[in-house]
Image (cartoon, rainbow, N blue to C red; front, side):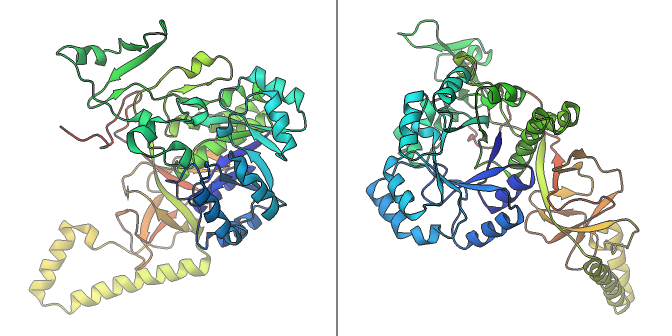
Length: 489
């Protein structure tokens, strides 16, 4: 089975490939159902082409899955020469009006039917095959039994199905709630995730406490016995939010059903999510195919719990009642993405950094020597009280390596960091086995964050695709945290 991962930007595309995806799907600006993802534009096609050369066996799929108005078709046609710069292997579409345009201008690219088209039966699959589609991304409402029937009826049609990620409470994602409340259509890529909003519970005294107990449910008048749990938190009420899909323990059943490709949801998710979820499913597939043992795959699969997620479900695959169960609260993780490793410095580059550090220390000593004795005494006292103002130079250590990193969140000297990479689940560094340095002056630095040019100096030999994560000390398992999204009263 092919593993297909989300890539909301070039960086995520790299990590999808590096962490084991066979293919990745991207969106082009304005023509994708995730317009709030970074998507691809400008000169980024050069970087995408470089990645395709770096990972020659990997495929690139492009989501053109909005419903096109006439103005959208005109815009696409006006930009079509630009889009030809991308090394696209297939287009994912739901609007049949775009099909002849793609067949004319991109004759080498395959056509994949979007899940938004809601293909859930064998006759529809036959019809799409006659139109030239190579693959169908099945509607999420399709059971494994139905998928097997579709595959038996149209064996030459590739079938793709979602295996992991957020789900929509609307049929195949065809939600009108966002458009109704915000004039932002989900079918135009502008979904405001209204089903996960924080609704206030308006009631008489006492009902709020009842809602907080978890004993309150909604029941539609004409559908007796169908209950939707209502949960009242600190500043919100959760009613419509669905659980997340997770099928990593059922891949053998998905393969037996005739599924050719497994799709991970999440182009708007983080690099950390893309990397670790891709890696977990890569190892699970490899174990299923006998390339590694189940025990070797187990620690990577267990890492799914350390990725931001809600409660999980098997969706519609076995029993549709599983998909009816709602969840409350935002997705959460015990870790924050702290940094990514950009490159390991060469020996020559490392020597330059050490030289910068020595020069910085000599300059500091020279400045002190030139001061009036009283001023010098005051400055030295200040250094003693605030050692971060007089950091030492990084010293050359045998067996240590310098890495250029891209800090994405705050990292401090006492942060509980861990390293994760494609081929090891999590490496917890020993005490005093790493430090941070300023690449501009070669001095140690007590902290770094986004926007600072920083080096990591450690005894661990890390691959370029390594991710640095930091333990979130405020994380509480099974608790709903307020991330500042709800206005305080």
